[in-house]
Amino acid sequence: AIIGQRNVNMESLYDYGTRAGFWRLHRLLTSKDIPCTVFAVGMALERNQEACQAMVTAGNWEVASHGYRWWDYQNIDEQTEREHIHRTVQIHKDMIGKRPVGMYQGKPNSNTRKLVVEEGGFLYDSDSYADDLPYWTLDYGTQPHLIVPYTLSENDMKFASPNGFSHGGEFSRYLKD
Image 1 (cartoon, rainbow, N blue to C red):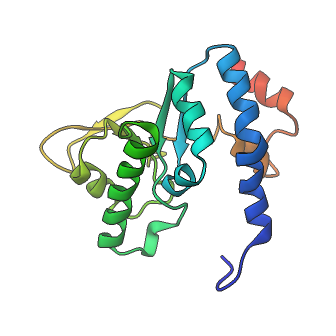
Image 2: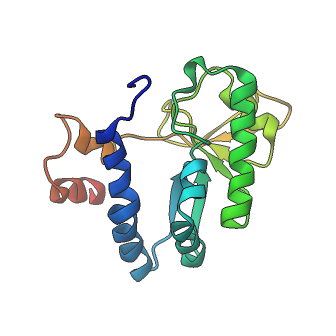
C-alpha cells in the first residue's frame, strides 16, 4: 500500500473492470444465459449503479458480498469489520434489492467467519482454500455454517503469476478438461 497518496496504477486496474471488463463479461454471459456469481465489493456497488442494474436484470446472477472495501482485514479491529459487514449487507439491499447470501471477504482475519455467522442471513462464505468441495462447520454457533472454498485454479489470478497460463486458450482448455 502507498500510504498517504493515490496508487494510480491500481486505480487504472479497477477502472478497466468497471469501464470495459465487466461489460464484456456481462454481454458474453447474458447472451448465452449463463448464470454466475459476482463477488462484489460494497463500495464498488455504491459507485456503479449501472452495473448493479445490469446484474439485477441479468436475472440469474448471484451478487455475493466481497466485503465493504477491498482491504486486508488482518489488522482491522473486530468492531470495524462488524460494521463493514453490516454496511455491505445494507448496500446490497439498497443497490441489488436483496441481501447477499454468499460472502467472500477475500483477506479475512480470525474474526471474519464468526462475524459473518453473527450477522446472519448468509447461506455460505468462501473465505477458505482448505478443500475443493463445500463443507460444513459448527465452530461458530449451534447451526451448521456452509463453507464453499474459493479456488485460485479456475480464476483469472492465473494470469497474474509467472506460473499461470500465457493466453486465454490455455485457460479455456484447462477449464474444459
